[in-house]
Image 1: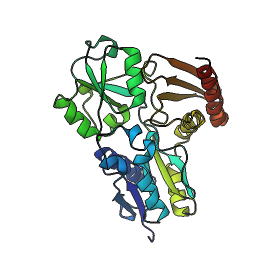
Image 2 (image 1 turned 135 degrees about the vertical axis):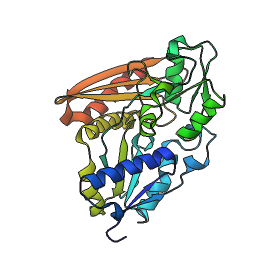
Image 3 (image 1 turned 30 degrees about the horizontal axis):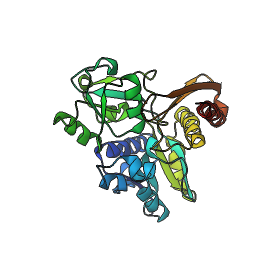
Length: 302
């Protein structure tokens, strides 16, 4: 591949916006010139099957497996991922050792019927492909009707406009990156809907032996976001979470401390275990593991 850095990603408009964010940061920091970066689109299982729930067709790996195959084969240098869609364990020989600065981590309510889940009319159809969001919707307002809504962000917005659903819940980060007009959505407070672990984060994966990729990733890595991701994904790993487990988590950093909040829900939203744990940022992973232990202990008592 010579001196060219080849980035691989999915082909959706949001995935391409994330790749361009990587390119812009690589060029602006002086690591390389624009003509030294090549972007390659790779179709994943999740891009082919746009109707089934993610949890029914392989979980998080459906958005990353083909990208990782390209890394292992040496056809790309760096795979650009949405971290919330990436399994907590990578194939042998691969590592995710860099993340870009986090975009807004929360979710948003999109549509014209209302701006608050609690106040929406009974029977309002809420589009989402997330089991976590489904459980949180039903916990907040059990009179709403979650509807499976798959496809890239543009497809979901089109389905909303065509009336397949009345409202939709989407990640704020995607709306920001694709510059959806703010008049179309309302941010949902994190106190009402904790995001998926590492939501809003762009992750960079490489082969362990690719040193030029390692150098670029180290240059682009945002330390604070990295600490948040360590805590949130450690919690997810310890809980054994995947796309079939309704888990919300968010790590907030203040000075040298980190406060990790988490919740584990039943799919119908009727039961929720909410916990938080605080410690030093140097102990981010341990805090994630410890908080998971507390959550599991409470879960066993239900």
